[in-house]
Image 1 (cartoon, rainbow, N blue to C red):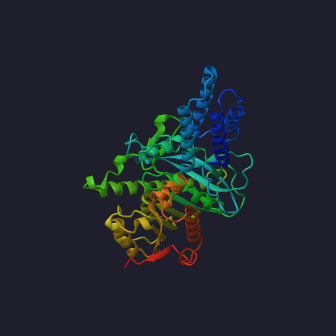
Image 2: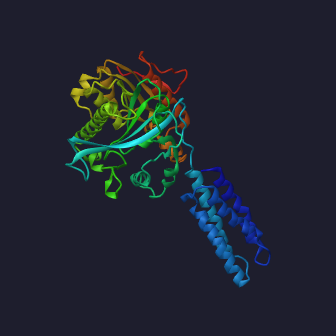
Image 3: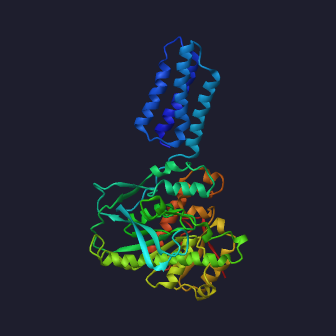
Length: 457
């Protein structure tokens, strides 16, 4: 939450207290100060739902004063206590759900961005209301920009409320609880002209997990773009919280729960899981096809993309998809799996292993579970992988921007015990080092003591 919010809201409390004590026979300068604070907030800050109780409190102050003057009686004490309670509620909401500053990219380049709907007529949609139609999904591009002058700064949650409300519905929370994060501004600028640097841009594709969204990897995408990468954030329709495929309400495709039913209630669970990972992987391959066309077409990126340097970074289901896509498409030159869910891969794939260069990072939260047996098998049969690294003190959600929702995510164990900004810096550094070196890569445990090698033999 912006400091101005705290200053104005908390600053009104002593004036409300003094106003309640002085009665109606004296000049109510303090009341005027309270109401001036109300209008000052509207001028200097952004209206947020966390402050709604405070807004109601100030309206109630005005009503109490009008009634007290009409009756020539002191302000009603019970109503004044309600005013205090409402203001305190706003303060609690501001602390529990603050407005965080977005992580800043550290590279030398400014960042441009735009989005695209990819319609893949060669594939039939397996899920949701579009079942039987051609498969369609969304991507967002981030790239190094020459200048951002005259370009519009974009929001972190580019698709707005449909995404945040799908998340709160998925977590069984009040629908409005995360609406404030739609106001967060990213470091990217819409359609900013790409850098004039003559070197072709290496490509990084980021694939999100089940019931996630591309925006939860914006920090990594923007960091890579600022370092000179052309980055594609996948939005896997029906695996994402919300995929906005058009301007109408019916164009918003929400998470399709039936795509991955509960394991305990589904005897053929891994068949569902395999289809989901295969769908994600096919989306990644289709996106690479689009990049080849983009590199050949007239426009800002004509002959600007390095199609010999394509890296796929995946989290959870997206990590399993990154592995599968690399098995099926030799254009992919390296893979980074963050808690990569490889359990759904077929035994044939696991036995064949992966020849593509790969880095696997595991959270402390995934130290146990069904996936490890299959991950170990993949590592044993693969020929070009680093050791398996575990980051102690982390959970599965630390590989995404869940930390931006609330400091409570750490308190209730959704995210781990390590500071979020530190984890963010660690992941960005490790991924960038891995992508930019052709030598056998090893994480420096002196620099990152929370990272340790896990034996898989």
